[in-house]
Image (cartoon, rainbow, N blue to C red; front, side, top):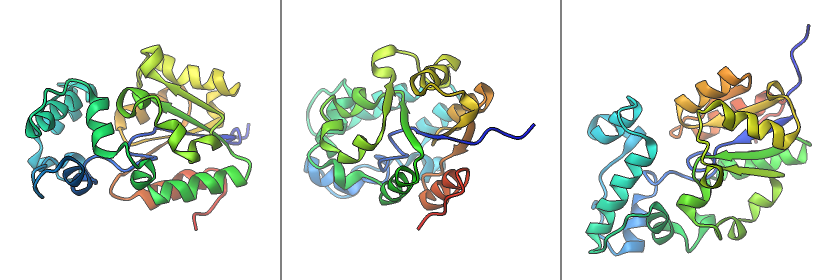
Length: 221
């Protein structure tokens, strides 16, 4: 029996469609009026110097725990009490969503859309982190036919139900979906659910998108 032909590209949002907060420290510092170098945690770009990130990767804390701590730390740097990740993200980058969009993401998404590939987003915290109006200010998101956001249903990847929900939303078997995420645990969850999956390397976005599009027989520019 031949393998099912992929029909949909399902993307995580933060880190895959947008650049990570680790990559935009300079933008954040300028936006918040902080001295250059004030933010020195580097997550996947320098795991040795970020013990909190290593704890998250070891499943000792959740991803939300990691960002809750960083949010509080940055809030203190500007003399405020921040308890909501959306406060951090919107103050750091909310004024210009286009500035934090990965150019590799825009190229790959438009190429897939033009080729007739169906597009969806499966996120654990899109609106929780970015705010409910962010989508409206990022025109690229209009190309996606469905967005499933655990901000509202509270079913976080890698819970098997999260992948089932996106399959139901697309009315496709999961074997017809290619899932892309920068967290390996979420990729493993997708594979276990029966999806094709790509572990997105934030340090090599072009290669990761080339791998994803390759499942559809598409080459990146």
